Length: 187
Length: 165
Image (cartoon, rainbow over all chains, first blue to last red; front, side, top):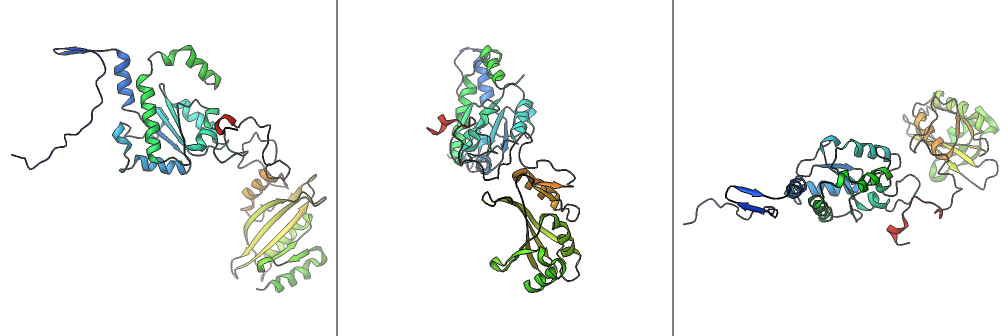
């Protein structure tokens, strides 16, 4: 007999990492658990300066709902967040501020450049506009588009989740990473 | 308030010093010698019939072909009582772009003169804080002057790989 209340049973759950399980225990590598946790609870910090920011707002809205991917709560302080979303044109005068925001984020931190302007300067091939934010801070994922549709932004975030999921726990202490930060004069 | 009346009053007061009378799209436009700009502005402000007491806009123009008067500063004035508008221009050579500041008369001129300095390099004598306002402080040129190529082939801050060039 069907019940009057229909429960939603089509819930998707993240796959369990590879490991060895027995009665009452499960063992796997630390890397995989940490990666799983980080990738599915990213805290976004929107740095929206123009039209790409509007698309990002749509992404966070109920139609596209970024909350489905574990990035529900936006923090408006860099100290709490680990995913910096730069959406929009960054003027050269804004560059030091963006850099400061990046510096205030705690490790581990990731950056997505949303749209043509944040990635390369876009159509603003002129003296006041920074030609891509990767001139002042390292970028993990570039989302193309002018502006990208919310699907594009979600795709970028899923790509970033892949990166986060598979990132080695030793990466942030590695020589390569230090050299990367040094090339941006950070630390 | 008609253009003829404004013109008549200004001519009575300043005579031949005010030149280049024009009326593009019905808006009275004239040229004032650069060293007379404050006197004319003050007269337009104080006069009981003219009452031009609102500075709508102040900006610069660069005319590379006009010898010894390359830079122009344009004042847009508004009489809010009679809803009349006029445009006043002064010209200065690019080698010595000195104009007296209107910021004592109109507080709005403060930032607008900073902007005009920022983009055209007009030196507003007597301005309380003549520094860049919109561009980065380190900039060492005046970007709106018509002396730069449309695209600089030697620039290094554009990543050509991204554009397939």
